[in-house]
Amino acid sequence: MRLLVTGGSGLVGHAMQKICPDAIYVSSKDYDLTKEKDVNAMFERHKPTRVIHLAAKVGGIRDNIDHPAEFVYQNVLMNSYVVHYAYKYKVEKLIATLSNCAYPDVAKKYPLKEEQFHDGPPATTNFSYAYAKRTLDVQIKSYRKQHDCNFFSVIPCNMYGPYDNFDEKQSHFVAALIRKIHKTRENKEKTLNLLGSGKPLRQYLFSEDFARILIMLLDKYDGNGPINIAPKDENPSIAEIAKIALKAINAKDINIKFDKSFPDGQFRKDIDTEKLQKIIGPFSFTTLKDGIRKTYEWYLKSNLTY
Image: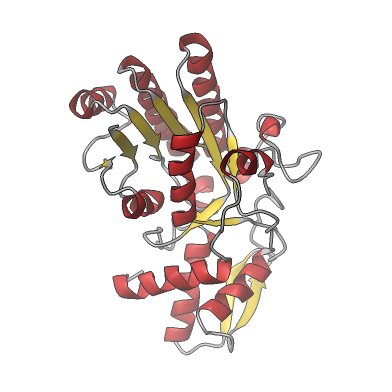
């Protein structure tokens, strides 16, 4: 087996390297996946028998709002080329990653099941990114139907962990939260200022848990996707996550203040994991407190300046 992992230098890519060190990991430094010639060259050189496609242009709410054209253009191009050339080079199995933010902004029932993925428009805050992920789902199903490719997709909930992006303008919530708590304590301030109301509900998945599950699916599953991936029965509010983070970082003396003038994004997007449980059986997920603590320890060791 020759396993190729795109997005190898990202959050999940680094987690994959710990669990599966013998795989081939590529990043944007190696190939520009928005260019067809680069994707062709990647498959021609490495000739993988299996592919885990993690590469994507990602960012937080503000980045999605400010750069919608980039999010749809870059993601659609790289997804289209990777899936097509995996077919052309006769890859035996491909797993591609979607996102729970591509589910409908408002659904008829929760938690969200896989068959609801295209039921209604996604949240306006990440509309372009969401439709790029929905297009990837359609492409994978189309290649599976027409060409009998053993390709399927997974839908993880929000993720975090070591090697996350902690940049102020591009980070997702947990990474931004860790950075803000650290800066608040470093500046000897007593108030942690967060954007939004704190009321939205969010599931969070530790990156190393996701990597382990991907390897399990690579070995155990050959059916249709997508497959939701998230810790079972966990859906805390943003405010609750902030309190958990303060405890994990041992900063319980800091108070939280929310700026309600900033948009919240989707109120809830928790996903049902019954399908996953039937495939892989019992799985011990990292608790949010332990995962944030591990991520913060990595953050400190990395000496990040932002």
